[in-house]
Amino acid sequence: MKIILNQSYSLREKAFNPDYLQILEKEILSSPYLGASQLSESFSGTKGFSLVFKTNGIEQVKQHFPFLKPYLKTALKPTCNVFYLNPLIIKEGGKVEDHVDCSLQGYVQGRTIPDYVSVMYVKVPSDLEGGELVLKRGKFPLATIQPKENALLYFHGNLTHSVNQVKSSKFRISLVCEQYTLDEIKLAKIPVFKIEYHT
Image (cartoon, rainbow, N blue to C red; front, side, top):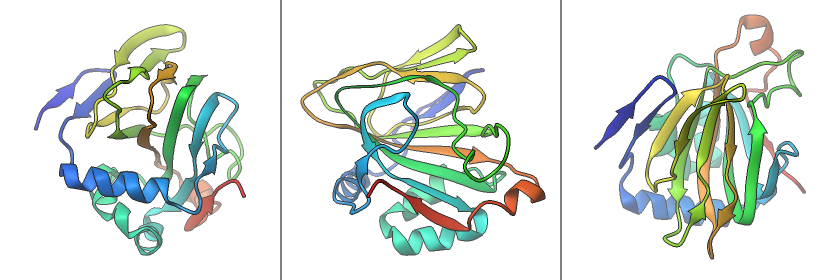
């Protein structure tokens, strides 16, 4: 196992058994909730769905999505109490424009930024060109990270980030999780567990 640490991000290679990646890929692609991304206009050429849940909703997530158990055990920060998880599929020509994650706006007033964002690279096609994650502080570039299958990446939630245009014959699949620590007032407004998807 190789771990890379710097001021902008941390990256853990070989995070899971390779067989588990195949299970994740199969389950994500066959999910009845999978559809055009319901995220912001920054996301083009992408598919997915979203799970919002609190710490006391993790068991419900496991019941609905048993295949996520190993991922949840490994990827979730124990100091956080709210999570917004997106299985994200980027198709040929897809990309993600500069943005800062704040997906809880539909539940709490004001701009609520996650403590951390984690990215688990489930499938990185062998013929992939592009698809790099670019981290910035405002407009100042900090890092460009090449996607690597079975790598688990964390970066600070207040960083602007984007994904360069993907060129590949197959899908690039990742699990992106915004991880928050909310006070009691905001926490009370978050559902214990909810699935968000395009019908």
